[in-house]
Length: 147
Image (cartoon, rainbow, N blue to C red):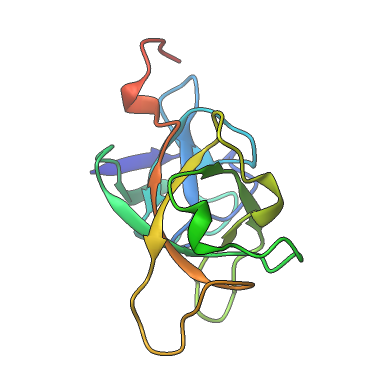
């Protein structure tokens, strides 16, 4: 679905950024620790620009994300655990997100993302900077509270 972004949004939304809904119904990039993620942006919009951005907002959608390689390497035994993401800065050249899974936040309790598996692609191995398949664990459309 397409969601509105208002000109007061001071942060660009990059392709692949996690986004959340604001009280006025517009979207903004989600921050690490937000428990109400709406989905993942499928488009780009510059900071302080009004417009619309397509968002993958189905709570059952699976995404791939790279780990941040902060020294707490992801292992196969971490499958099924939860973790938050780090809201890194996107690339002005590729317009791609800088959001990564924060390896140091792996927990059995609640967190933003559920680790389902690693991507089965050549060169991708368990460990630092592994590309993972995840599901949004703390999804806005699955909560009972509104904005």
